[in-house]
Amino acid sequence: MNDTMKRGGLANGWRIAAWSAVAALIATPWVAMQFTEEVKWTLFDFGLFGGLLIGSGLVLEFVTWKSGSVAYRAAVGLALLASVLLVLVTGAVGIIGSEANAANLMYAGVLLIGIGGAAMARLKPAGMAHAMGAAALAQVAIMIIALVGDLGAEGQAWPRDVIGVTVIFAALWLASAGLFRKAAEA
Image (cartoon, rainbow, N blue to C red; front, side):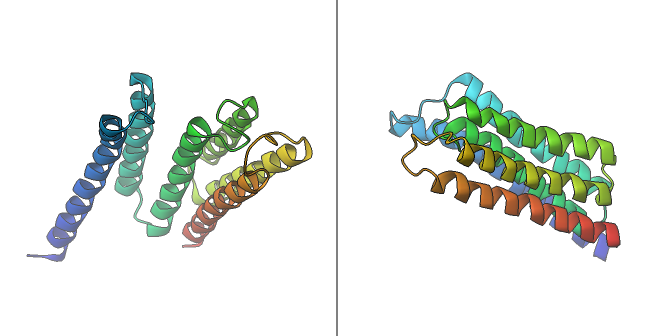
């Protein structure tokens, strides 16, 4: 068996594992609903969650097919992970106070900056690095607005929750930017 066939088999194994993990993640809330009343997902919730995961998986498949750069692929993977987690966290529990706090809508701006920056960069790695850096700055700016404006102060873990979550997301965006920069240098 030649090297290309071996790599193709390995890639197919990873693809099967990844898509199986997506299916398992989508099924997890349904299984939880069978055992507890605390998980109450609607068809819309499942559609949004499934759309986010499947859409992200398809983007990653496309990037994997199109780019030979491991750094570029990893950068896209981190950006997608940050995007999906940001939507899920703000929608499920909220970052600024509870999920019902309208201030959480500011985080849509982070996603728009990332998507708009990627479009302006035409997905080229150097421009993508700038777009992810801008997303990190937007994430931090929202934290500052929340802290200065006392937004979400009714939360039990205020302000630790906003600061901690911001540090995690900013780190994801910056790690993605660093990987895009590495891909640009290659």
